[in-house]
Length: 96
Image 1 (cartoon, one colour):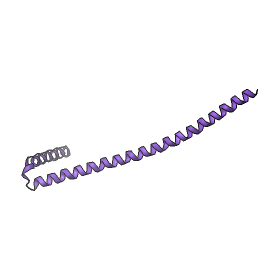
Image 2 (cartoon, one colour):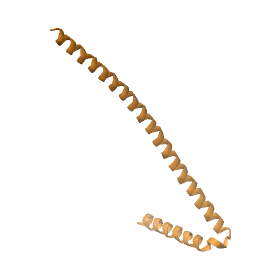
Image 3 (cartoon, helix red, strand yellow):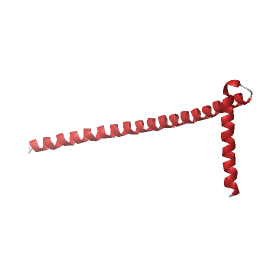
Image 4 (cartoon, helix red, strand yellow):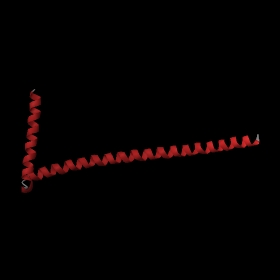
């Protein structure tokens, strides 16, 4: 009978240790999820900032070409033609 009590006590001890490890791992997992969320938010903010800077760069580049920079005149003409086509398309949709 004493052996049975020892086995049960040993099992209880092992289960207790496993539950404690499970709790520690759950806490670590929650912390890692929070860190991952924060990193994802930071990455999204960086992507948004990159898009903003690219738009600013393209606007500045277009402005420079319109000011008479000879290097990008053809690019400016193409951009203006594209804008005109987009406006024509919008006007056509409005007229329908």
